[in-house]
Each structure stands twice: as structure tokens, then as C-alpha cells.
Image (cartoon, rainbow, N blue to C red):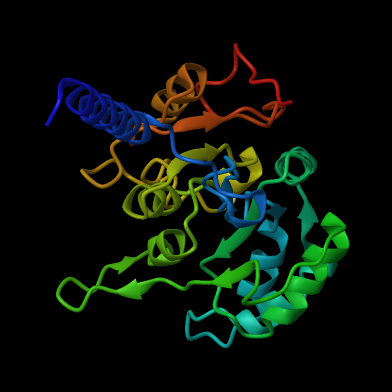
Length: 259
């Protein structure tokens, strides 16, 4: 083999190696827009509780309690068909729902109510919020379940939060915060209307109106501090909505202004 042939072979080999190296360092070709997933596009799936989060429904539940058969069990078929009479939309939360939707994010609603006559609640929410809400589509019912060992009723909303891929979950109760954390979502606690705290404070920072115990350790003064600090007992962000015109003990000197 003469020197000219050797130089040609070396040049060909060098060119091949350079091209191969360039091919390995090329950035990946972006997928067509039609193939991009929601997570690729930065689209959030956001979840909301219903009672004392989207709807002020205290009157509905109090009326149901007066009507029940004495067994202590509420008639959720009655409750889910009477929101139009006794429940009202919380305007600040409606604005938040519309904000997320206007930004292209996906909104879901998850309630611990049983699903009896759930389609009636879906229609009421559709009318109030102005877009289609469908039971089993973007509205889900997830009643609490009893622990077989302790008998304590626990939330199971976390299953839906996880399965739906919800990234942020808004709710008013302790179990909403637990469900968000267990389901892998960021929890945001919506501050209840003070009238709801007077009517049924259970499952909100323990139980402010009951005798203090390990399960109910927080006073109304603690509650005031949590809200002013903007962080709840589980480390969750607090979303204050209400001005406390009829203040709880500990709120006399400072009112929390809503949005």
C-alpha cells in the first residue's frame, strides 16, 4: 500500500469518527406538540374539596340534622338534592377555580359526601360555576372509611388525589390536608367561615370547641396565630378568605381581611 492510499484511509476513518461523535452529542429532537403530555406542558391538575371550600353549606347540613331519623346518620340523598335551597357558592373560591381554568389547568372536585343523588350536586355546581361538572368526570365522591382495628373514620380522598394526578389540593379540614399529603399533592388549607367553626369545628385544627386533649390541643388563640402566620399544623399553606366580623375568642383585636 503506497502512502497516498494510507493517507486516504486515515482521512476517511477520521471523518467517520468525527461524524459519529457529533451524532452522539446532538440534543434530542422535541416531540411534536400533538404528542406532548400535560406534564410536558406545565399543566397542573388542581383539586378542591366542596363543603366549606367551594360551598358554604352549613345550613344544608344543619337542616339535614334536624330532619334525620334519630339514628345519627345524615341523609346524604337529601343533602345532595338541597344545596340549591340551603348552600351558597363562596365567591373567592369560585374566582380561584376560574383562574386555574383560564390558565389552561385542569380542575377536579372531591368531596367526602356519599354519592347518593350526586348528579344533582353536579348540576348545582355547574349552574353556580358556569361550566360543566359531571359526577365521575370532574366531580368525585369519597366517603370516609372506618379503620377495622381502631374504628376511627379516616379519609380516603388520597386515593383519588393520587390516581387523578392532582398536584395541588384545596380543602378546609384536617383530613383534606392529610389526604393531599398522602396523595402526593401540595395541601392548601382554606379558612372556614367563622359561623362554621361555631356550628361544627370538628376536624379543623383538631376541634377548637371541645375540651382540650391530645387530639384537640389547639386553642382559639393558637388558631389565630396559625392564620396570621399563614402556616397550619401540618405545614400547609393557609388561604385566608374571611373577615371575622363576629370574632372568635382571641380575634377581638385583629381581623383577617379576605380577598
